[in-house]
Image (cartoon, rainbow, N blue to C red):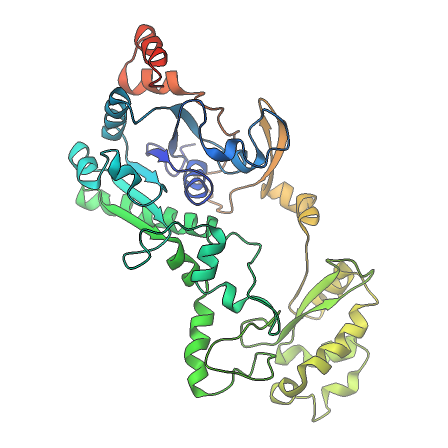
Length: 410
């Protein structure tokens, strides 16, 4: 069965996380992703946070499955010429170097477009045009400057980074969408285009409900927030749900670090929730019966429910509340998730065989296409496919490959 992106060739000049998360997703969907790496070193994450000496790190393997690797020194004249030839045969060139890095090597948008008018040149940057466009960005910087940190944490605590990599992988997913849109537009125009996605912009897009609330502040307090007072900025609101219904993470038995269940109180389920908590009388009590009444003392309301949840495990709480149609979810640790049989059966936690490290687990493809099933293969060893790619795309013979290696070009 053909994959959704079969026939699409991507030159992947990305590294670390934001770019590789994008190109891995496209590789899962069937694109031929050729990772272009520096001879002798490759993507820096191959050696970062290693758990096994001399073996590609999980940081690298979990972001580069289903790709091919070619090593190429683009600072050399021959390396530049080879990259020119690869660009002529590619549909997409993706990169997330620092501002201006490729331009300084001569690979400007104008040069790429001259080589291949159909090429899509996709770049992840920290910031869009403006005062910060030449600044470097990392995950937490993007969270800091995209609105996430100022709205994450508790009211009396410092701005907090989220464990979800919304700056890096979040931007990668945005770039994947942009690349697919550009590929689709090319089917009618026949032309490629420049695609840029900024990490700050992507984080802000994921914080849109907080931008919504910034505008609502002009009209008074945000009543669904648990905060005691409001200034002229959206405050940090702990574990408030962020929607129109109040929610809280409630302690469960036996009281471990992640023994919590998140519970949301929708108006129709309040009587059932009060009954389950052992206080059916609260369903008709004027102080609790309506959302408007409950919002005035949410700490007390959730305290009543928590007295019940503390006597049960988080999974027992979820099963009981699900039967009563109460929205809820246990706080699942990484240990819970990596051992979850349902996620494994669905391929969301996938086991992958690697030639050096053996079996490792990774997050599988979250996109499910009925006509394009995903088969996850190991990340490539450094330069593993160099000879194959140069033979296939440029017709290089053994003697030429040997000479290129001797000169340090590949």
